[in-house]
Length: 440
Image (cartoon, rainbow, N blue to C red; front, side, top):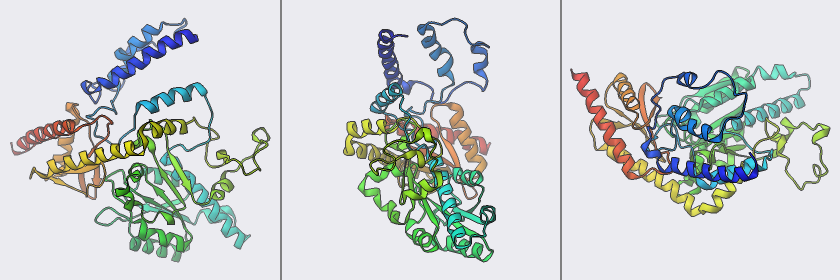
C-alpha cells in the first residue's frame, strides 16, 4: 500500500468507522456466537500471496463483528465506561503514524504495582540504612501491604508480583475502609514483628463505586511512614467537576495517585495518568542507565526522563490523545459529559425505587447503580442470566457481602434517557417473568 492508496483507503475506513458508530445501536450489544466460532471461518495458515483490501473489509462484517461485544453501544451498561471520541481516534491515527516510543503511564493496575515496588524499595533501604546487617530477604518476608476488602483484584496481584503480603481491611456499612479498622490491623501486625509499608485507598471501587475514607486513613499512613497510593481509576475523571471534588478531600496525604482517562474522560483506550509526591522514590527504584540510552540532557535538569518511572522502557504516544480531546471538548464540554452520565444514573435509580420489587443496594454517587430484586441470590442470578441471554442490554454483577447484586453502569458516549428507559422496561419485563416462574 503506497501513500496514494493509503489516502483512499483511509477515507474509506473513516467512513466505515463513522457508519459503525452511527448505527451501533442497531447491533446486538452482546455477541450471539459460541467460543471457538472463529476457527471454522478462517484458514489454518496465513496466505502465501497478498489478498485484496476489499476481501479484508468484507471479512470484518462476516468474521470479526459477529464475535464483538459492542462496548460503545448505548445499551452497554456493564463494568465501567471505556472512553471513545472522534478527536481521540484521530489522535490515535497520528500516534500510529509518528510511531514515537514515549515514556508515560500504562494502566491503573500497573500504577499500583509501580507504587508498591517503589514503596518496597524505599522501606528496604530505610531499614538497611538503620541496620546494615539486614538483608533484603529478611525485610521482604516481613513486609505487609493493606487495602480495603472492596479493592480491585489488581491490588492483590501487585502483592503477588512484588512478593509481599497483602491484607484486606474489612470495610464498613458503606463499603468504605475506615481508620479504626486500618489502625487495628497495623498495630496487630507490628506487634507480630511485621513491617507495614503500603496502603491502597480506592476512590470509586469497581464493585459498587464506594469511597474509602481518605481523610481518616491518610493521616495514619503519614504518621506510620507508610506509602499511601490512591486508585481512582474510574472516579478520578469526575474530579474535573467542582461538585465532586469533596470526594478527593485528603489527597494531600497521598504519595501517589492514579486515574484512567480511558474510562470516563473521552480518551480512547489505553491512557492512564499517575502522579507521585516525590519523584526520587520512583527513580531510585527503577533507574537503569545503559550507555545506549544516555543523552546530553540527562543531568541538565531541563527534562524529566520517564523511562525511570515505570516497568517497561517505552510506550505509545498516549498524551497526544489527551491533548486532542482536552482542546476539542474544553473543560466545560468534559464537565457536561460527566454530569450527563451522573444524571442518567440517578434517573435509573429513580426508576428502580418506583418498583417495590427492587432495592437499591448502595448510595448512587457517580455513574453506577447497584440494584437487585428483593429475594434470594438465585433469583437475581436468574434475572441476570435472562438479561444477558436476551442480548438487548449487557450488565455484569458484583457481590456485596453475601448478596448477589446487579450493576447498571452508564457507559456509552451516546447513551440518552431513552436508552435508560428502554433498558429499565426490559429489566422489569424479564423480572416479571422470573418472578412468575418462581411462583409456579
